[in-house]
Amino acid sequence: MDLIPVVMSGGSGSRLWPQSRSLYPKQFLPLVNEHTMLQNTVTRLDGLDSVSAPMVIANEEHRFLVAEQFRQMGRKASAIILEPVGRNTAPAVALAALKALKICHGDTEARSSFNEQDDPLLLILAADHVINDVKVFHQAVEAALPAARDGKLVTFGIVPTHPETGYGYIKALNHKDTKIQSSFGKENSVSPCLRGKPSCMPVEEFVEKPDLETAQGYLASGDYYWNSGMFLFKASRYLEELNKFRPDILEACQKAMEIQNADLDFVRLDEPAFKACPDESIDYAVMEKTTDAVVIPLDAGWSDVGSWTSLADISEKDEAGNSTLGDVLLHDTRNTYVRSEKKLIATVGVDDLVITESDDAILVAHKDRVQDVKKIVDRLKAENRPEVKLHRKVYRPWGAYDSIDMGERFQVKRITVKPGAQLSLQMHHHRAEHWIVVKGTALITNGDQEILLTENQSTYIPIGAVHRLENPGKFDLELVEVQSGGYLGEDDIVRFEDTYGRA
Image (cartoon, one colour):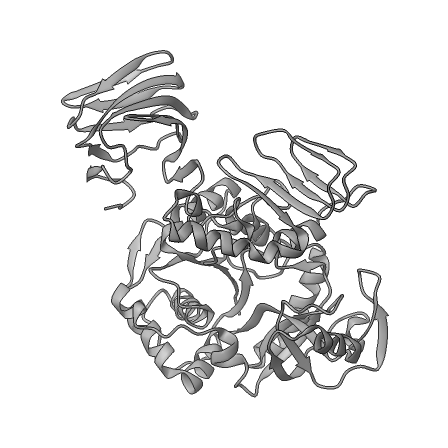
């Protein structure tokens, strides 16, 4: 029986602004090491037995980010399912289950009967979590496999290290007779299954985020675990339970998958059908209602990196409790997280702050107020400011561009084109462009001419001229583009041909 990891990659990560943007959210960022959160999630699976290529559920706007990050790893996804709109986790997992059944049966239509014995196991993972102890994570997955094969819906409960009010909790049935040391050195009453090989326990209930006093009681009882949002079950069993409790969600997902279209490495859904799907989490739709939910404890240094303070908590610290990244100078500074990407950041006489800088924005916040970063994001949305959506450097399927300067009637970009990639055949109504090759070789269509340019050579694209840029070489092509004209917006592009299927 195949084990197919399903990586949920649809979040926006607004509490990690300014690094995380709606069109470039936290799962695509290297926040904890040189790899992105998505890449860490995928490579964390290495070493598990009988694991198939992962499936990714992503926002349609992020499709090329997912594909590029897999390309950088030298891997392929079994499928990248694109949601035209977000509809929460219950529909997303349903899409994955339907697609997994089709993959495992020759990609024929998913059947109406979901009680097959040879259907795949789905390991549902978030793309933006941190798990420090991969070995313990593998042990928990392997220990959960028998229950999942037996038709149980397994959830992974994080052994709590403190009375957290920001997470939902899972109550397991009455296992508080053994005390152990968690990996964080704090003694808790937890299940004896954490001694050696863990085992699954029936779920008594799922509970909402508690207040502090309630969370302290949960911690003391030893019966409660943080709800990680990670699951393991057979594709057929999930669909069977979804059909029992929320047939409307299943029906909408089946209709959306019926008219799916293959587009490069992507699976596109029928947009009207999926938009009609109810918005519901897997917890509310299935896990809180099923009688077959079981929980397996996981004590592996887990974090959902939901805020700057949670990122600071898992970062290496100096003797004064500071965490730094990039070009940073500290003086008389304590318990502060400082992240620099482009500029030198110096601090003097500050405590308990988060300071982070991106190419076009700086955030300074007290650690006790980082949850309010979302309010800044809401204001940026209300004012329709670009800093809420994009970084100055914007990634495209063919490469990237960095807007390095802008003024009245002009804009300067540095453009990078990957080997073998090409931009669309296009024209502009309101701007002319001048291209200067800095590195590599450019094959350029300019009107009725085809030109090959090398370093230090240039060409001029008049307003209205049909043009295209291509990298025929084996190394990145870099050039400087100077735009001039009365309107320089990205929507002044008329595409005639496009390798990547864009409108």
